[in-house]
Length: 335
Image (tube, rainbow, N blue to C red; front, side):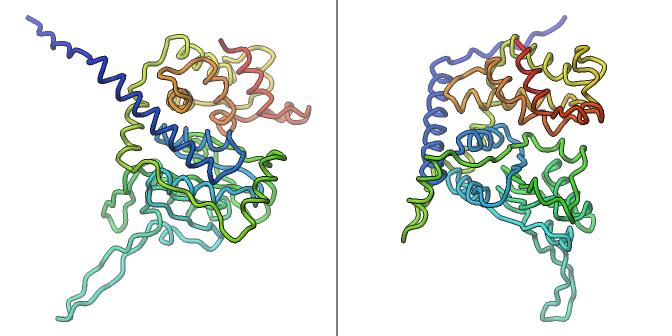
């Protein structure tokens, strides 16, 4: 005789109250960030969506576009401990994750003590990550995937929540070590940071060159952020959105793409891209004050989620095609 577990009734009033509190907190986060970061609304949105979805992001842009200030601001507003590591060719894994040192007490007894590296923070900025050697990159990316580091056979858990916002300069590629595709896949999104609009840059000139500068203020704390991340994972996803995600991701793969795109795509995104789109679509809906994602969220997130997870053929590049144009065409056909 089979036993069926009793269904726990859902308290609709409690769910609505939780959702309204979450929307109010996110609205306050947006306001506090906007008081310091002028313009760049799309960049701020995608960075916060990445964090709400529980992932990491790769910021790609030329120097001087406030990438460092954005990370500092997010750390303050979200109530997270923040750190920054400047990646250089001589940076070693121990400079990031930490190392063991030999101590000697008053009695002369010696023992090893683990000294934590800068990765033991809640929001880490990995500045110019492609400047470091592959070995050093791997040390950080392993921590991003497993949320712990192992030194001398001992496991050391990273603080929760743990997020990495890495930066990369798209111009200077001499003396760099480009991230391999398998490591790029560990970033939930690649966020392109462009130049600010005219009015935003005008405000930057006026408000950041005086005696005092606007400082960020906290809106939530780390436990509240974790509660919001848990809420994102509980949000319902309509069947139409699931189908749109599957259609988009599968159309970006050779073998399942349409004929006009088949010759353009060398390799495409795997199931992790589908997972990333599902999580970020939920997070974007909550960021916009909605309690369920739509197909429009999938279209809006197609480029940052897919562009570092696929590549074009040599023939496509020779014809002047680029990944963003292909993704835009695939996203337009979804729905």
